[in-house]
Amino acid sequence: MGIEQFIDNEVKSNDVVLFMKGTPQFPQCGFSGQVVHILDYLGVPYKGLNVLESAELRDGIKVFSNWPTIPQLYVKGEFVGGCDIVREMFQAGELQGLMKEKGLPVKEAAQA
Image (cartoon, helix red, strand yellow):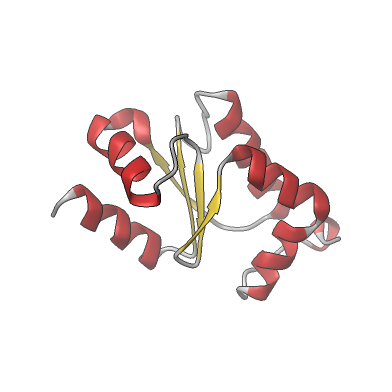
């Protein structure tokens, strides 16, 4: 399986996928850590994929999304954005709305 197929499969078979540096338990960059913190706060189940484990994955996700930076968040197969976009959406209550709109559970305390 090529890297694009792998990425496409991960994005389509998981409701929420975060391509990040490090793991959800041990983020290895501040931006990835911020997105993990937001997702954990929302209580949304997600899969974290560590791009530091594979140069092919790190380069492949940038091509796949046509987005130059990591982390990258996908919800129900759609590219949402990187750290700044996710943070701004969260602060505006839009990320919570998107998750609920897509049928994903959001902790009550996290709802706007």
